[in-house]
Amino acid sequence: MQQKDRNFTGFGLNMNPVVSITSGLFILLFSLYALFRLEQVSELFESINDFVISNFDWVFIFSSNAFIVVGIGLALSKLGLVKIGGLDSEPEFSNFAWYSMLISAGMGIGLMFWAVGEPLTHYVVEPPIFAGSDSAVAAMASTFLHWGLHPWGIYAMVALGLAYFAFNKKLPLSFRSLFYPFFGERIHGVLGDFADIFAVLATMFGLATSLGLGTMQINSGLDYMFGTGTNVGIQVGIIAGVTLLALVSVMAGINKGVRFLSEINIKLAFVFMLLVFLLGPTVYILRLFISSTGFYFGRLAEYAAFLSLNGDSDWQGEWTIFYLAWWISWSPFVGMFIARISKGRTIREFMLAVLLLPTLVSFFWLSVFGGTAIQLDGVFGGALFETVQANYSIALFEMVDLLHIPLLPGLVRVLLFIVITALVMSFFITSSDSGSLVVDKLTSGGVMHSPRHQRAFWAVLEGLLAATLLVIGGEVALFTLQTAVITAGLPLAIMLVVMSVALVKDIIQTHSKQDTITRKKKFRELLAEFEGPAS
Image (cartoon, rainbow, N blue to C red; front, side):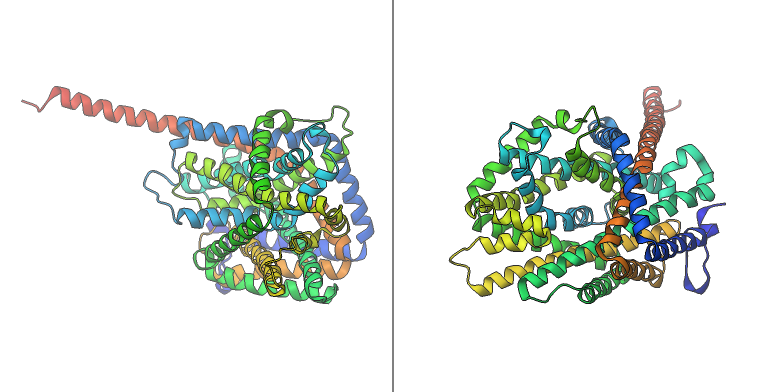
């Protein structure tokens, strides 16, 4: 039985009832259990997470590096000429729209909050793997290690697998399709339902965590600018606003909603980055960007494979492994969204664009804000780092304040703060609406055009989940959920490694068959030409 034949289509819906109902019930039960047993749940997941990081850090290091190597290998080989969707498929979106959606969904909000705090932290507290190197360059290279090729390598492999099996093999655009080489038609049954439920929970919990923590950060920024105070009421109001705007975008669809908003995000972010670049230590930023990028690529193989042989590297567990596990747990969401917008691209174009472009954009963004933060922290005697330690949410606002540009009157300062807040909100909306579209795909068995009110349901549920967690447990509940999501990264990493092997094998076999057919066709044409017309 095909997936579409198992869907419930009553009441104007088009959904897989097993995946939808099971996912919804699990989310409800988890929230209720956390409400009454928050401390026990927090301790449980923290213990599991510590065990995973201490004993299986090598899994995250190996898998994330393998995805980069396989992705580059596919791009540079003759398999890179294979087109997603077949020879006659054409891109649905312009290059600029495609790039904008890639960056907005994959990194946008994270780069807004960590571009100041992380480089500055690594500058003050030297990372052990870069000990003895120039402090500023080492700080940036450490940050690049977490925001560069590795997250995009993970996203690229998942996205390619989903896009290839959906558009080339005509399978549903759903997480279950990644495992078709192993289970065949059984992916349309219980095994496939389990895979999609896993992806739905990872996506919903990951997005709810980000939305909840991000809301607290936005609230801190508003308090810094306007003295609004920080409390749950304001935070729930922010979630309601983000959810409402995301709902409008989801109802509009990818072309009129997500694409439009992503393009605005990138344009506004570029203007903001350019202002800081010109108003800050411009020459220093350029030198830092070039030096750090060269340092990163020059020592990538060595440091990307670094592991403490005794398993006692607290820094690596708290930073590198944390990031890798988080990126892997987010890969069903980001990977599926990238797959949805990438039809018509060759594997070479896809891999090089997804791997390199966001990486280089992230590097320059981090250099602008991280470099400015490092310089200002030195000028003001460590004041900015103290802010990062106290509340990293307002580090970006504090950095703009410390610029102290004589030509910047108070009104311009306020406008810059408003731009920061608008960017943060906009990136959150983009993550929320694209995430809702992905969850809808998963719960509908990969239906390309599902009912609008069905998409709206998941956008609203996502906001309700984040608001509920904030109200019942605040930051503790959100960090508990974040820990649970990261813990889920371990089985997911193993699943994705197996998927990558199957994907490459299938592409090679399909390409070989196509080559054989093409050669036979050309041979027959040459033979007919040689023999000439029959007498």
